[in-house]
Length: 100
Image (cartoon, rainbow, N blue to C red; front, side):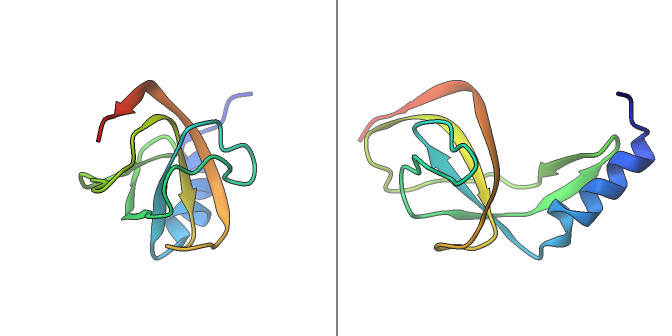
């Protein structure tokens, strides 16, 4: 099903971009629908900007200091720094091995 850029931008503006701030988490497994497999409870704030075609992108480098040794395979987006509601997640392009 094809969607116009206008429609996709409307969806993006009414969903992800409607939050003042969102938070990024890192996961060792697919977070599914509830954010399982979060590696650390230390989330980082992110700020999405709207790009054409209903795509959003973060506008800053995000660093996770003090990570435990882990294999990061997925990311998650939350509405709060701690606890909160899991909104969505996805797979990284390639897994990242974190060495301590």
